[in-house]
Image 1 (cartoon, one colour):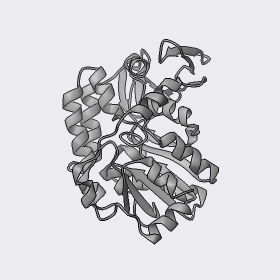
Image 2 (image 1 turned 180 degrees about the horizontal axis):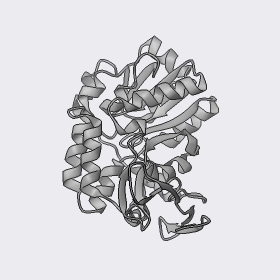
Image 3 (image 1 turned 90 degrees about the horizontal axis):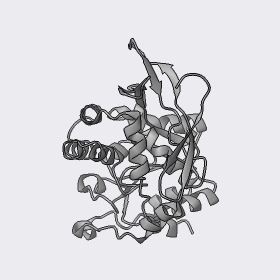
Length: 298
């Protein structure tokens, strides 16, 4: 794995092969051994399978029976004005852009599914600090580079129904799109490619691997590795680009945190995959289908 980058062939289905560059090598801080920072693994250089989008669009997403009682199901005039005038929209990835929690899928693939899923629930409901939940989950999995690659090959992320159309509509309105996630960059890049989102618009955590591909930790300097991190990331996005109006869309407590002065002007709770009532009730607007958001942009 030393020297010039060489392509790896990764197959996500029986019909589509993806060409991806090998990992670059860096020294990990406070470590005595060489660590690989996987900056571009599994990033497709060819179009991903259309079957994934078809499968996602065909799936029925369950609606919580208590959703009719939410006071924010109908957006106010002010909320709609902010939504329509957004310069940028930041999306959570797991259970929002994608139907699954990526770290739970990786854990299940590596044989630690149940224990990790319990920590994910705690993190998303805000009952424990996110950094504690992240460290606990990844310590239970300790995935190698090959396991991450195999997981993406055999269990490619499932795109949520309507998200591709929403992002297309936002782009047509000259609204910039970002992915801000507590998940791992290695598992998000194929999703970003599929949706036409540039890699520089991904803010997420970073897995680290040893020279033989063994798990070596994760980068604790990423803002999304800790509680309040999404708020910091969104504030940085706004500052770097000078956006006047910015919207955050997601399903969890960490997404709600981004709604604060200097960060997101609006938080839209997407409850089409997971209905987290503690989050939904505090949102400016709660939706169960992305078509609801598209309709208000037309």
